[in-house]
Structure formats: structure tokens, C-alpha cells
Image (tube, rainbow, N blue to C red):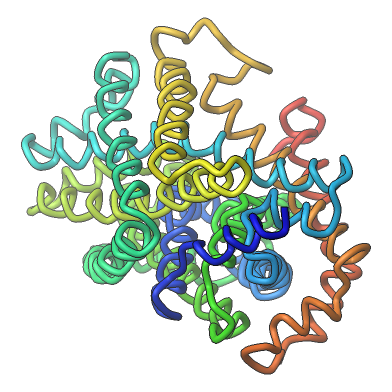
Length: 460
């Protein structure tokens, strides 16, 4: 058994270097969570106040969790299941590993459905008038059409699986190296246009200047949930990508770079969307609380009022498409890595198995708004249920498993030694304090409040 494990480690894929790793993890973190989810949550839960709370949580709580998962991945050279079982093979270790591994397998299918929506909009802006896309019924008619939704979902999914089959260097890393710089350039272009519109300045102030009157407990809870979603925490991704890096990679420095990159894109996304919507609505704050429909219904209305709305729409949805692909790739890669590690399958075989899982569960999510709309779980559509199950229940439990593994089994000293292989551990005291005393409390707050919200005990 030991010989087999050593052989697997020898043959394991690796990133080509530090930049390839940072851009790949940044590509995973920078996705629909930043461009689709962050702006509407910030708009709904206090603007600048939400941003401030998010930043504080990200550089403390989020930092500690990223360090933990990445260090465990590099230490064990395994994806989450193998990483946990390195320290024990009893039921608790198996549970901790598998819940981290199953999460991306459940997220990837419905994520690809939303990726299909983005792909559809990108092609619509290439061929149609922005005024037509801005029609109130355009999005509703689209997701009500099972054939159309399924078609674009499959197109997006096959693109992701193709990248995964190419491998870590030729697929995951190469795509991230190309798409992430382009994404930044496009984001800066759209942001510049957005904030220079007449009336947009008030939206900029609302988004960036904290107003303590807008603070509430829900601001903290929503910011915590967004941090999980945005930073790829508790999805098995950081374990997997950590297992692909060599000992010369400075984990702490890389974590800081990922935090900066991820937050910068989230802020740019807010500046792309909120000032534009603010200007379009003549400062009506209710339009900012449109929720997920902000990107697919409200933003097209903004583009329809522009002199070159067609070009703006093409660029914006190309940007979102890049972000969606890089994140979907990381979810699928983590799932493929688990099958390779645990069952000895080849990359192609593992990729095809994950493709089947994505197509089956994704099709259910895609058709949940039309053909299968009669199926609801806790009054939620199939897609919304998978989103709730993974983000609000399973991810906090997965993060809790990691915290317990480090505190009770691995030990803070061993994590510190892993970090110090390649650099000084500058924020060691901060890491130890949050991991030992605060992480479990914060995770508990997310889990309890999310479940309570679904059952109507509290209202977000």
C-alpha cells in the first residue's frame, strides 16, 4: 500500500510554478461569486458597510481557512479525501474528507447551468439588439424554455470538461493564465464606463463609503456566507490545488495575493454594476435589491440606455463568462482529482465520470424552472435547493471538519512548520488565534443562521 501511495505522489500533476498556482486559485476564487453574487449582496446589506465587514472577515477568518486547506493539501499531496485519511482511517476522518470532496461534485452541475445562462447572454449580445434583451420577459422566457436552457448548459459544461481532460498544466493553468489578465482588463474598462455615467457617483458613494446606520447582524452573516462562496473555501479546491504545488511556493504570500486579486475583482464588479444601476434608476435604492436577477434583468436595461450598449453587453458578459469558466474548471478539477486519488482512475476516465454527474444533476437543475418546475424541496427549485444544501449546510460542516482536524489531530505547530518550509509565517499569531478560538464560532453562526432563514425563523 505504501509503495502504491508513493507511486501516486511521484506521478501527481503539478503547477509549473508560483504564478501558475496563484492565477489558478485566483481563477477559482474569481467567479460568479464575485461578479454575480457580491454586488447584489453588497447592495442589499448596506453597501459600504457590507464591503467593510467583508474585508475584515476576509483578512482574518478567510485567511486562516485558506492557509489551513492549502497547507494540508501540500503536506499530504492528496485531494481532500486522501488528505483526511492520511491522519486516520476511521469514520470521522472519512466523513471529513468525503464531505469536502462531494461539495464540488454537487456545485459544479448547477454552476454550469448558470454558466450556460451567461453563455446564452453573451451570444445574444453578439447577434441581437440590446433593447430586445432588456425586455422584462426575456430572461423569464429563456429559463422557461427547457430545450434552450439545456442546450446552453451542455455547451458550457462540455467546454469545462474539455479543459479538465487537457490536464493541470495544459488545461487548468493555461486557461487561468490567459483568462485572468483579460478579465482584469475587461473589468477595468466596464468599471470606468460605469462610474462616469451621470448620477453614478451616488452609487459609488453608497458602495464604498460605510454608513453605520446600514449595519445589522445580517450584514455580518451575509458577508460570512459570501466569503465562503467567493474564496473557494470548504469546497475541496484548496486541498487539491495545494497538493499540486512544490515546497518552494510561499503559501502565506500566495494567500495574500489571492485575497487581493479576489477582493479587487469583487470591488470592480460592484463598481461595474451598482453605480450603473444607480444612474439608470435615478438613485432608486430598491432597484439595487433585485437579487440574482440584477445581472440578467437589471443590467441589460442599463446597457439598453447606452449609446454603445451592444458592445458594453458583449464585453460585460464575456468577462462574466471568463470568470464562470475558471471557477467551474476548479470545481470539476477537484472532483476529477478525488477519483484519480481514491480509485486510481485515469484523468480521462475520471473526467468522463464527472461529466456524466454534471450532465445528470445539471439537467435536473436546468429543467427545474420549466419541465421539472413541479418539483420543489422546502419550497425551493432544484437549483436553489442544491445551492442551499452545498453553500449553507455542507460547506460550513466541511470547514468545521477541517478546523477540528487541525486543532485535535494535526496541530497548529505542524501547520506552521509546513508554511515555514518556504517562508516566514508572518501572520502566525493571527492564524493561531482565529483557528483555535474563533473559526468554530463563526462557522456555527453561518450554519445556524442559514438554516433558520430557510425555515423562516429569521429573515435575511
